[in-house]
Length: 307
Length: 284
Image (cartoon, rainbow over all chains, first blue to last red):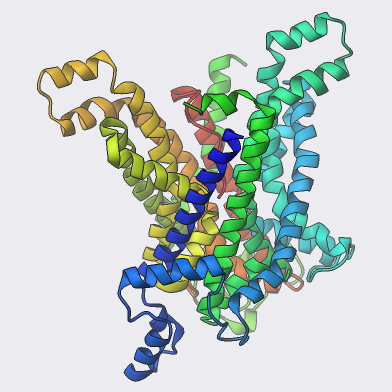
């Protein structure tokens, strides 16, 4: 229980820090009012907008107000849609999470076995092919992967649709686009982690006991190799959410990331704010879950950090 | 093949695309067959030389405005590499300095910086970039600073960890006992010890940053047209992929091959200089 309480406290601190960072990024990199108005706006218009947004108040007052709006989830009204910014973002959150989890599922379902197979066939053809895939996958930007998938599977082969949400066939290309990079990273790490574990005494012992090779690998090796892998999954989930921004843009996927990027171009500032805030907080929440899972997988971490 | 020849080959092979990109970037005005911005609407969307109406003069075809794709690739290398290099150096310098100082002094500065690192790691980088660029507006200096913000954390964390161990070593204690001032201890005694790790980290950063820069430019938040950049050229290409595969394929291939080369060079450097302390590459 103390472990959970400590992790919760840490999460609250990080969430607080994330809010502060959003505030700093949005307020200190320029004047939002000047960015929002067209170039020929008058000084009066600028002053009125600054007043409406509360930008004419001292920075610490703005900060406290920002914290309050973060807690209540009220980031103001979208200038474009005339709806609360938070409502717009939350409407699109399920789409983003669906995409991110589909990509996560795909990368774990393929990346993990790929890493295991590579480790078990170290130095042979299967290993080399898996690692070649991993190295290339890591060097390919999401957006280009998306464009190439559209070119091959939608334009040339006409197998799959390229845009929108709904039905599994519309999820496949975006999920592959978003998942491939992580799949590659995961395959590499799983391979390294498995190779390390397979050399340990307890694996030799398990084999010496006469356990079936399947049991040795699945029960003894994999559970121990899983610790760094689970940590990576947590850390990389933020990367997936960031990549979702790009993927959504390519596939016209109606998620938070696409909304946030579009809002930048129409200078819909409250929506940008709410979108960045919600995505960052989702990542913090996922990391908490991973930390708790980590404590369950590796009981040592529960006591090691206690001191 | 002997081990050493194999190792040499492993280092030289990935260096080829990296050197090619560097050459293209430095020699762009002389090696590019055409101007990267001269448009010829009558020749728009000409396919590459080996396809249909393609001509050898426009080896990789032309884009939407009739500009030569190959020339834009070559000039794009200049922009992409310059930004990546500038951001990598800025991030590595700030991060390493903070790592050296916090690891050596510990205390309150250390606690503040460590917390800051924790918070930033809990923040998907693309989102941070979006927040900053939404307000500051897209431009190359903003882009360099934002990308450096994305990379200082890795340096700070790892250098700090190394310095925490080094500061207790006898030679550091001896230097202090002999009256060496703090800057002298940090730059003469600690920095040389961690330099190889910084170098390996920075190499991986270059690859990561090339991808991030092209991603932001692709989203319209980075390099702005008509300046040629691999990422922003792909922005148009995505919309016209049905009509013209070549404007989408080549800039992406360029990014992929160069990043692949840089990462493999990083792998080899890591194996040579420091097999254990540097973590695997990450794309944020």
